[in-house]
Length: 397
Image (cartoon, rainbow, N blue to C red; front, side, top):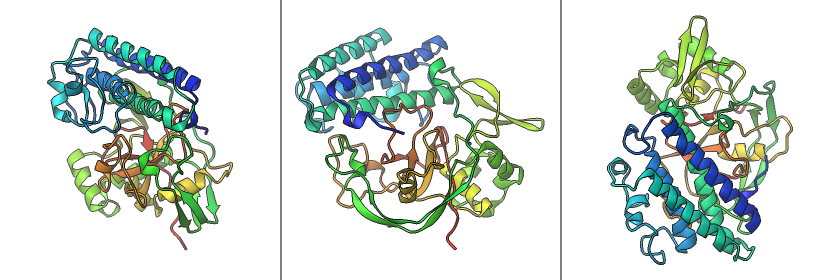
């Protein structure tokens, strides 16, 4: 899997920013097509944002870091005023608590879309005058990465609310290759990214040498069929497979199978963007929380890989190790690398250290330009709305 946005030239960035905005708007319009008001009638859930707020926030972020040349996300670090009189009060995620985003007196849908078009036009015009250096292009790459991440979040929201997705984005993860176990010899690797590697997220720095012991890892993710064996064996009812936190989460869910699974006679069916589909046993299992992944591993006598093991395998070049269909839970808590320093987007990583868990890879909903074996995704362990699954490792010995 290749990545292009981190080293994209001005021309490549211009094309990618336009593509990302067209895609964002197509996702946003899914709410109107479904007859759901993008600001007022979307339920207030902790795992989603009101779509109208999210659309405005995406444009505001690009205006803040590119047009207003903000040195950081601190309120005092931007130049000039927002194109919208109350834009900073509406769309700055650091200033606007999640719960209040449903009650803001936002502009109309047409007004927010006009703002989006105006920001992008000015961004693209300014980009034509930038030198092709990492320093000059950093804010453009940051805004593109931010919009790509929110695009995937829009798809999570559509799935959560049971709404159709655009045809070109509703493709399912494909059946996997025949599973096998790969033995890796281990060794010392450079974990994280270096300055000079193009765009680097702050939580990927500082690159450092890290020793990985020999390990054995699945070549593919756990499939629906494999996970169904765990369910059929009463895995959700057997406390010994669940951590204390996992057992507490499970009790709150009152669940006996993954989110969206429904038993239909002898087979399982699942909800995909509002459609009830027969579950393919060969596909990787998805919408799995960290707790469920850990419980499956305990039942199977396996374990989750550490993020260092995952990065080692992904960069090994082994032809059987494939990734990119689903985000993959790892055994690693989200923690800073040595000598961490927050970047311009101050709230991107630091507030989530020690409470979130690292996922690696990408999903079918992740733009190909975004995928990188170095990227550290991170979410709270209870999140099961993500397009996330997992693979397992053997215990040593």
